[in-house]
Structure formats: C-alpha cells, structure tokens
Length: 78
Image 1 (tube, rainbow, N blue to C red):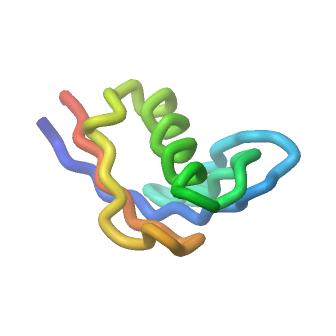
Image 2: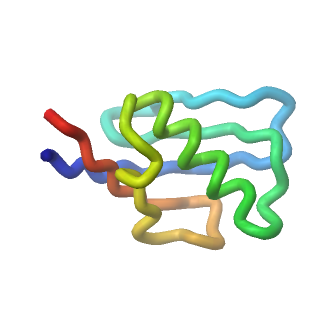
C-alpha cells in the first residue's frame, strides 16, 4: 500500500461538481452541497474515491476539516 498526500481547495455551492488538477497533487474540487454538517467533506471523499478508484475508508482529511483548504491522505493499493 502506498500513501499519497494531496492538497485540495474546495468550492461549495457550485453549479456543477468537478475535480480539477491544478498541478501535481494539488486539486480544486467543486461540489453542490453547502459546508454545513460536514456534508461537503463527505461529498469530497466520495468524489476522490471515484477519481482514484479507492474505497472511501482509504481517504482521510488530515488538515482542514472546517476550511476550504484541505490536506488529504489517500491510501492506494499500488
């Protein structure tokens, strides 16, 4: 298993959901939901899970639980 650390800037209440790679291991993620109640974090984990083809349980928000700027650890099976 390999750990990968990425930085994410989150844009909530976006018109469409998407993930954009700004540079290596730096992403911008747009989500429909508001940040209230941790729903945006759940949606971010779901999008990253699909993008990197890993289970949601392999994705952890290390820093930025309540911030637009997050540091996220992804455990891949490579």
